[in-house]
Image 1: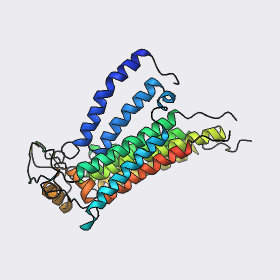
Image 2: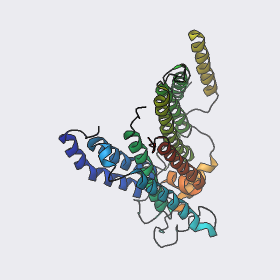
Image 3: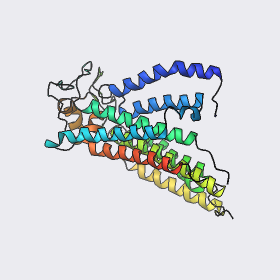
Image 4: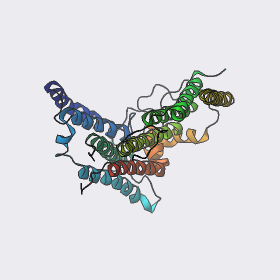
Length: 154
Length: 112
Length: 88
């Protein structure tokens, strides 16, 4: 595990980085139009990181992305989620202040089927993004910590 | 007439509880709790199903008969929380193994 | 002793089966005014085509905040459990 797997696995995992990242970001960004959202998209991106850890060895990957930075990203995601909830505090907590406001993400849509407009949704895309970042960092941190644990010989 | 989903729910919950209660290996106990959580998720989703309904998403939807939305949101919450709980339980199993040398729940724990 | 345990578990499964007979049948949940309100008004109030996302992040936002906090606490707990000892 420490020095990674064979060259075939390494090459294929490098080829798969881009499609998996783009798919995860697609699931996160289109969370208010298609099935998906912050939690599944973050899990897809965390799966990409787990694939890299398995292919290249977790000890080597730890030099580029450590526990501390993952913890920071996770805290920032949760703080961003709470901050977006707090911005609309003048109406109520978790108020959707961007919906139907004709600004960013503020397109008003009415009841019924439509082809799906990315510019709608109010604060929901922002919250999806924050939750996606948080879930990505949390699951990556759990996998990294579990892979690099070595039992002390006592 | 009992629906097939409900029979699956009963089988999953009974299997999960039997694994969680009867098995000695801690990893198998964690797996039993995971199976039991899957049964509960299936119960929630099938309670909210409407005959002939589609997923509650309006993007290019074929018809407007939709299944109930709140059980699906609660199931998403339940899945994420069961992931967190499973990760914590597995970590505790690893720590217990490294401290006591065994993950058998009925053995003597203290290593002397 | 083993057979007693399995008997108790079979009785438990029978109790579950007895319970689900009295539930409403799958596919006919009856009146659900809250969900009908969500499906009817989610697009005009939250601007979201996906009603599940609308329920998750707008109508039940506090629930999702607690869920994210639980995930955060679990990740922190796993990192705490697997820490290296400095003095050895």
